[in-house]
Length: 191
Image 1: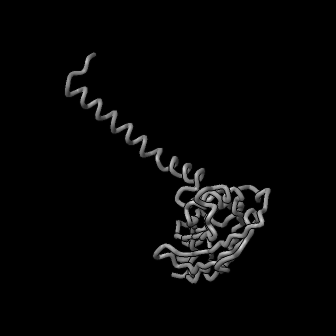
Image 2: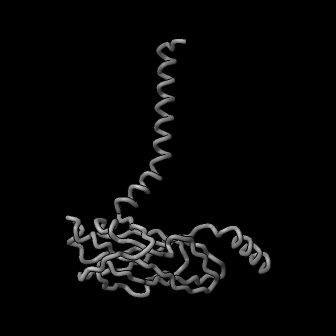
């Protein structure tokens, strides 16, 4: 069956819409993968263990904390900066406090500046890999274990970096299933 002019145009338009929808659907996971692989946009690397080599060159790592508007927690780094040798494993802590009378779940997003250092800043363990739930009045210290990859000294742009800033932003998320039931039960008991 041959398609005439208007039918052919409709089929082509439907094809364009399907292709554009598929590209839009695939763009988010592709962009996330691209950022993780290249460090683009300050995305950090993830490692299972520390670096094999530790250089005799130091770098300053600054720690920054912020919250999404409306997030009721208090959130801050325990120390504002540390000097470590490139390749050395560092351990830093952030503190979060829930001053409310209800459990609150949060998730941290993060980035590293300058962006050229993102691919060389590797996290071994981080509170940001999982959602956090704080009970009313609970205060916790959350660790991040990291190192700066020695390959940074070979990068034409990143080798001149002397200070890296690790920034986290906490935002509120829905309570996990079990916590949501407990929160609803607590509200019922207080009414």
